[in-house]
Image (cartoon, rainbow, N blue to C red; front, side):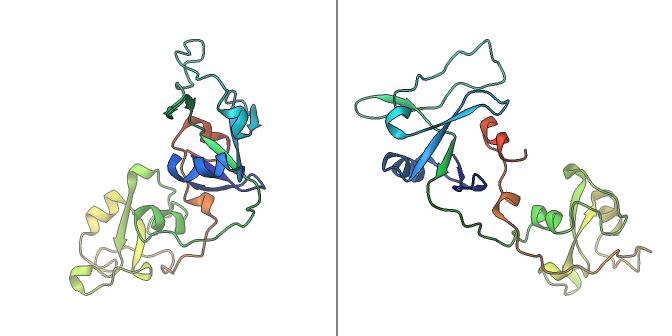
Length: 193
């Protein structure tokens, strides 16, 4: 489930075990997403459990059937988006030191060719190869085109006749929305794919 702050900005994604107690106690409100044009209705727990479970929606094939949660006395549909009632802070976090984090720091741009790369061409390169004593920290990693990185191998950039556009640096903290990816079609109302 996507959790929004009271200002309706994306905060984080959690599972039902974490979110349902907050919904039941009134800490948050669920969004009943009608369709993907941006039509939704904020709904409290008492009304949520009375909503019909939508299945077999042949008339709207882009929308999947609702996930169903089963309790001892009744079944109800699983919310996909909730809005917190009081929380409005936006924590900032550092990206993980992995390929996606390197790409976020470098803006998806190859640090040798200067080209904007699609994700399938991303590759992280160690400026000073690890086999030659290079570290695995942010200041030794760059985003590089897979083909260029394959050509470079474990040689230095100078040995390959390549030049670095800018020195790698530690990343700046980012808002959580930078790390969240839509795991349900409803989330696309507030997040990127």
